[in-house]
Image 1 (tube, rainbow, N blue to C red):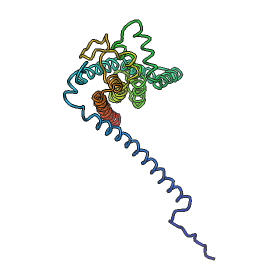
Image 2 (image 1 turned 30 degrees about the vertical axis):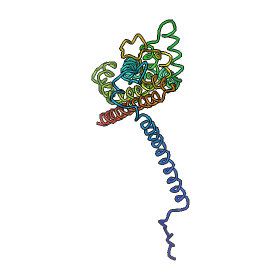
Image 3 (image 1 turned 30 degrees about the horizontal axis):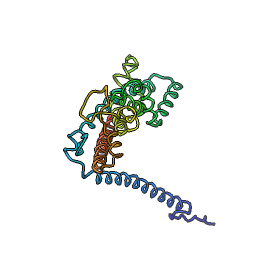
Image 4 (image 1 turned 180 degrees about the horizontal axis):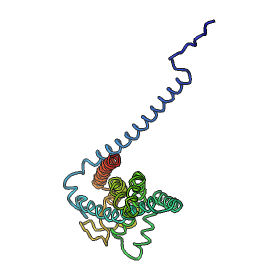
Length: 293
C-alpha cells in the first residue's frame, strides 16, 4: 500500500488571516494617531502664526514695551527671559548631573529607588505649587526678583536634567568602567574621565529639553517675577520683564493691538522651543553615534 501524502496549502489559514487583519488595523490606528498629533501641532503653529503676523516685525523684536501710547516691542522681555532661564540652567545643571552620577555610579539600589521616586514626584508636581513655594521662601518679606524666578524654574528643570542624565549614564557600556578600573584608576576618576565625557551629548540633550520647558513656564514667574519695569535691565535682584508673563498680561488687556503682540510673543517663544528641540535631537543623535562606535 502506498502512503498518502498530505496536501500542503500555501494559502493562509483562518487564524493567520485574522492576525494579519488585526495587525493592519493596529498599524492604521497607530498611523492615524501619529498624523493626529502632527496635525494638532500644525494647527497650533499655523493659528498662532496667522494671529501674530500683524504684529511681528524687526521693531517688535528690538524695542522694549511701551508704557503709554503705541505698543512697543519685547526686547526687554527677551533679555529678561534669557537671564532668568540662564540662571535657572546654571542652578539645575550641576545638581542634576551630580545627582545622576551618584544614582548610577555610587548609590545602593534602595537609596537610588527612593531618590528616583522623589525626582518623579517633583517632575509631576504642578508648577504653580513650585511658584507658591518659592514665593513664600524668597519673595515674602523681600521683593520679586529674577533670581527668585530662576530658582523656581530651576526646581522645574532639576528632575528633567537628572533623569535624562541618569538614562544616558546607564547606556554607557559596563566594559568601559571595568577596563578603567582594571588599569588601577580610582572609581571617581573613572567617572570623571571615562563615563562623563562619553555621555556629554546626552546630558546636553536633557538640559536643552529642560530649558525648552522652563522657557514657557508662566505660573512660577507670576508669583516671583511679574511686577517689573518694562525697560531693558539686567539687575537680577529685581523683577525683570519676561515673555511668559508679558503674554499673560497682554492677553488680559482689552486693546486689540496688545492681543496681537501677545500672539507675536507666543510665536517667538514657540520658535525658541522649536530651535531648542531640534538642537536636542541633533545632540542626541551625535551621542548615540558616539556610543555606537
